[in-house]
Image 1 (cartoon, helix red, strand yellow):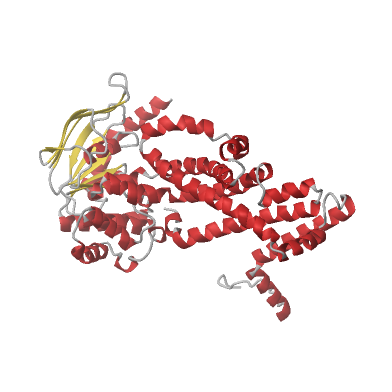
Image 2: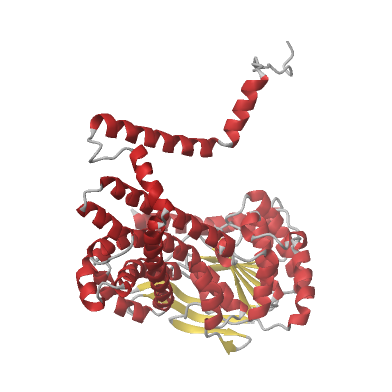
Length: 276
Length: 258
């Protein structure tokens, strides 16, 4: 045997059919697993609520779907969903914009930052839920109190993230721009703000989840419409199946909103999120 | 001419603070390739930042062509080791060049020619639409060189610019840099801790002691043609001298830790 001879591993020659299955699986592995995960989840839920828990307390998915269909067909669920979504949207956008504007200023002016930071540090532990009672007194149970609460839940997350992003702009990038001849305003607009974009986007995703978690208690305690109101109302009437429809709706809405946010970011700000 | 005399740098309170640099006197002529050589913690980056105007000296005078240096100036361009931080990662190669020309207020009509000229000089013309993250480390540093040259500074201040590159790429960057230096006649102040790198590149090597109270221990002048061969007896002799000078310094800095 010469030393240049290559030993071949014994190869299996699977049937064409097997190969095709394998290649389809390789291509769609992640989608397949997602579908499988959901199917298993629903199957487990069905089994648990049939054999372990009372179907009244934990309505099985088949009954939840049966309840959901007329709510979808009549448009009832969409009405509540759109009301909740518009509250989240207004509060989230207003909170984000205000926090980004303030955050980039605080990140640049350290005296102002040190002056404002202690107050922010105290206020940001007040969850939107803690603010509901006073919000109702200030703004009533109309839209304004919900906007305020979502704003509150968004603002501090965005402020902390934006400030951190601005503060972490690489010194080398600012100094290089300084040597090139950039003015302070140009460094701020062309270097500091774009460098903070990845932090701002992360903040928006966290704040979005927070907004979804804040709208429900706000609507449960002080509203006459929205998904939270649907939850509260169904609870009073012991309609557990309708409660589950509302809970599913919240999950799906939150997920879709996060995906939409990511898509918008990818379409508009992608180049700012590439790692250096 | 870049001139430092009696420069001291103290961090913290004026008395009792950490004295990083003590009584530095340096004169760097126009068109000279000047190396600051020393082990970690010898204050060579601090000294370079003072020359750039990023940090003020505590005591002493720093002048460029007899004008005192206050803050960063357009005639002195700093060049950083981490190109990923120094460049704008959200702009393509060409857009990075344009950014430099825009903030430098260079008339827009001349941009295409300037960009072509310098991207070609560093061999990046065919990569103008790529983002920095898509380039190799060496290519990113070449983009940084092109960007620095495009605004036509008189002095290039380079802070261990090639220390993060692999040895082969580093040698190619040395050739590129020497070629550009010889063609443009820029003054270059180059910080390194690599004796071989200093011997390959410099006209003058200032060997610094470790801190606190770093100073320039000795100045070596190399009147040898380039490209240089490190096996050359003259260079080997100089290398041995520098090493003999630095060995006790490194021992001293390690003893301070123990």
